[in-house]
Length: 289
Length: 231
Image 1: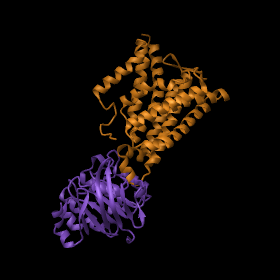
Image 2 (image 1 turned 30 degrees about the vertical axis):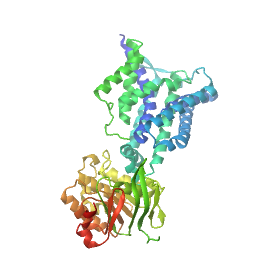
Image 3 (image 1 turned 120 degrees about the vertical axis):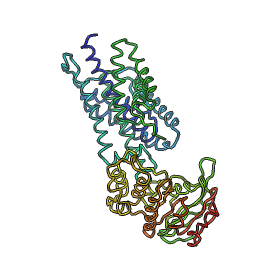
Image 4 (image 1 turned 90 degrees about the vertical axis):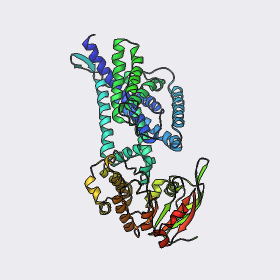
């Protein structure tokens, strides 16, 4: 196969993996800290895309529109955390998962009500292309990859270099112990949930120009995000990054080999990895509820 | 009933998990600056008692008071911020955090960044600051857990089975620490090591099947291990 096609496919896969990472990182952190499966993150992803689209259409500005999308998603996630999750953290994980799925479905309904069923095209902020090993690659995709890398670095810095991050890492191990030291873990929960919402919104806003903004876009990425979180290992940020890029490449390169592989190959990869490491690539068997 | 300031008083406490009741009408009082020990067999409800006082469990009935303040209904972090610290059993330190990070976290929560008090009782920890909790011995973990609880000048220490599985030399060291801490804080300790209890306790509560079956305050009876008759 043409090497140029492969290079283009790798960049495409990395940018897709970056979107998956931004989306799955919040989900993974929420599970690690609060032991909830927050499917409503996919609503914040959709909302981020729609708000970015709307602001972009109204103002003609794309980057500020994306920022607005991320912030709007964060604001909605704050409301949901305060009004819903704060009351059900102690319930079974299946209860929180079903609740979050209900929020997602209701939210998608609201999006359809406001913006309609027709997919909307969103302007791309940078249309230039750059030559990479003789292949023209869209600069915007490289920027998306760079943003994902910067977000990963920022989260690692937060977790490893700040006292709040230390508290989060400790609470991932044992929430009771952290609370017993006098730390208000519920504020940590809120902060983490809203942070996850902002990341999901950012993922949607960044993805908007690469796909059509669509009411179903959140539901369509559910299987991929699940795969990323499970392959990486529940609660592991590093695992989420590696897994996101892996799934992105499997989808992208798989489609170059044989188009239907784009949908099927990630599931096969997940099965093989789970057979080899049942906790995922970087998951800990010690994580307990 | 009135109690002097600083006393930890439990009255008529009923606690359960779901439909299973674990504690039945528990009463106890630990005067300020004294050490009370709860002894009893596994499953008697001793840990449930400490977890209830620390705010992790909400009682079905009864009260837990520190001085004039009712602790029931407060969240664990609020209880901890009042100076009532719970040292859990099983030597649960944060395995992925270094000793320094463990102490920083306790300092962050209490606002007390002076670790001299920790190193005064446990000088060994000073040389282990960069070691992760997961690589500490059982004794070192226990020192770290008690050390963390000492930051912020605690008023009450709730300590759950501190000597379980530890070498005699470490038990001896912890015994000395507990004797020194008496007078500075009120201590309520769950402990199965009766010789240690005989050495450090001012009052002993024997707990059996969720009930306090004996309160022993006679120092000679405590020292002689008379509590064993109630287990």
